[in-house]
Length: 155
Image 1 (cartoon, one colour):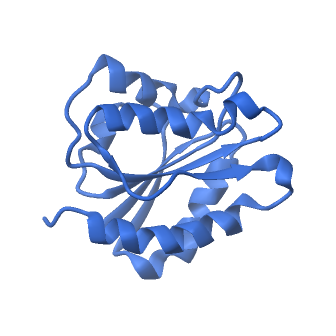
Image 2: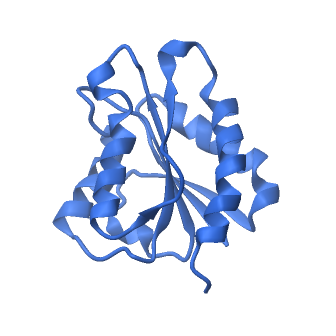
């Protein structure tokens, strides 16, 4: 099974987290790809893979600019995504309490609305905590990925 990490980012932090996961979790899965969300649409979920949404939050709790087309296509081109199993890494800053990690939460809400199934809880990283999201993201993924692989439909 393949892990496909879809990255929404403004400052590259989510991309760094995804790349750390790609390097440090390669022993857990057959293949890991990291794809920036730039220009993607709902067809990004057509592959036989486990998906990991790795996204920051921007502005007033929005998805990053590079994730906008994919996020919007989940409404403008809706279709049933019951085959999709996914996890969410949401990056945010708790000093913005009302919109903390909303980028990831918004993707989660839209995907569930189309029948996709999230595996595990959303992992939220707080930039104001002073911790490095790359190492913590790898730790989370090493625990999440076996659960996600077990929950993936047999092909």
